[in-house]
Amino acid sequence: MTRLPFIAGNWKMNLTVKEAREFAKEVADKIPATDKVEAAICAPSTHLETLVSLTENSNLNIGAENCHFEKSGAFTGEISPLTLADLGVKYVILGHSERREYFFESDELINKKAKAAFEHGLVPIVCCGETLEQYEASQAVDVITKQLKVDIAGLEKDQAEKLVIAYEPIWAIGTGKSATKEDAQKMCKAVRDVVADIYGQDVADKVRIQYGGSVNPTNIAEYMACPDVDGALVGGASLKVDSFVALLEGGKLA
Ligand code: PEP
Image 1 (tube, rainbow, N blue to C red):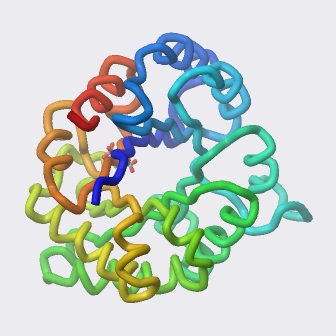
Image 2: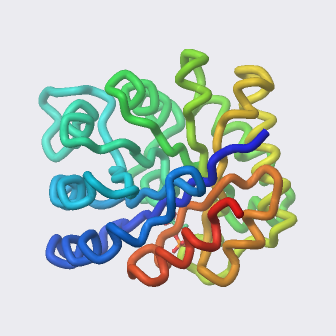
Image 3: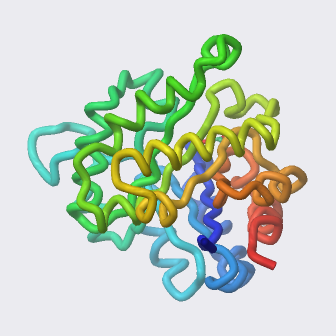
């Protein structure tokens, strides 16, 4: 089955709004055709309105890096999924390893956020991945299976098939030490198998699975050649226009 490749940048807590504005203006007409690759930049919430308005006539989608599971209420400092949707944001990264590690996000919390995201018309990019210690102990498949069984539980079938799941080994994020293409394929296939176990093979065949962890314009093609890798979630290499566009060129359908 042909799935449209999906390359998403994760800016994390980088770039000023001024720099984001310059990026958006410069990149807008450089994004390849939407039938070849889907492109998104996930940015800090402070940057989203600017990015959405500068890219609305382009092929670039905008995503957030997190959201709360409630649409409103007494949650000082949090980001409402309703507000994100209202801004024109399309995607939201959930359960990134940095949020799991530094903000103690549990799989149960990530699941509540995923359900809320869909309820408000956002598509979650749900992240999973193992530590180096777990990788070395050959526990990677068990770890991501345990995470995802909770993270993506209880969705409607039509929601589940729209899911994007990013497999990101923690030891490869921001380290320059990327996974081998064999490991990326094995793990993305394991992700698809979890989706198939919960929602059936027809849904699993539609879900887009990204590899993330030190992806750059040089190594993107080898990941995209793997049958179960449908794209990439990219941190560092998404911060500069040239490099982001090169990732899209390397990831698009021939
Ligand atoms: C990420 O932020 O999800 C990521 C994969 O970062 P990097 O590409 O810099 O490793």
